[in-house]
Amino acid sequence: MWMGRVVGRLWAARQAASLAGRKMLLVRPETASGAQTARLIVAIDGLDAGPGDRVIVAHGSRVRDLTVGPDVADKDVVIGIVDGHELGPS
Image 1 (cartoon, rainbow, N blue to C red):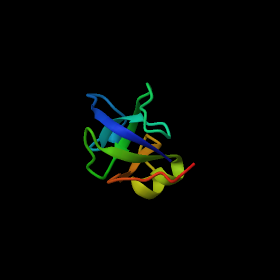
Image 2 (image 1 turned 90 degrees about the vertical axis):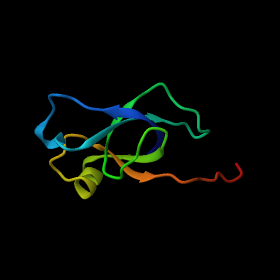
Image 3 (image 1 turned 30 degrees about the vertical axis):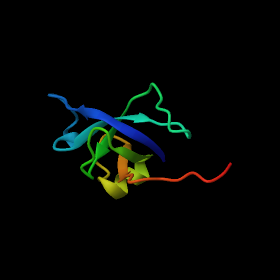
Image 4 (image 1 turned 135 degrees about the vertical axis):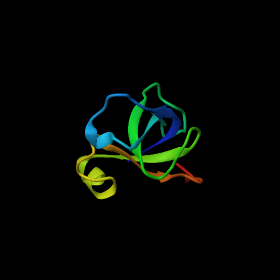
C-alpha cells in the first residue's frame, strides 16, 4: 500500500469491458516525507475520491478481487481517502 494525491481523472472512449462504468483516477505517489514523485498511476476508485484528495492505494489481484471484483482489468485500487496522518519521532 502507498499514499498519493489524486491529480485528475482518466477516461477512454475504448477500454476493456470490465472497466465500463468504473471511475479511473490519476494518482501521484508520495514519498515518506510527503513529497510527490514524478510517476502517475491509474487506480480504480469506488470511494468517490476526487482531485486534491490524499488516498491510500493498494496493488494486487487479491485486493482487487475483494474490493472491486476479479473481472476488473486493473490491480491498483483506491482503498481509503485520508483525513489526516501523523508521523512519530524517527
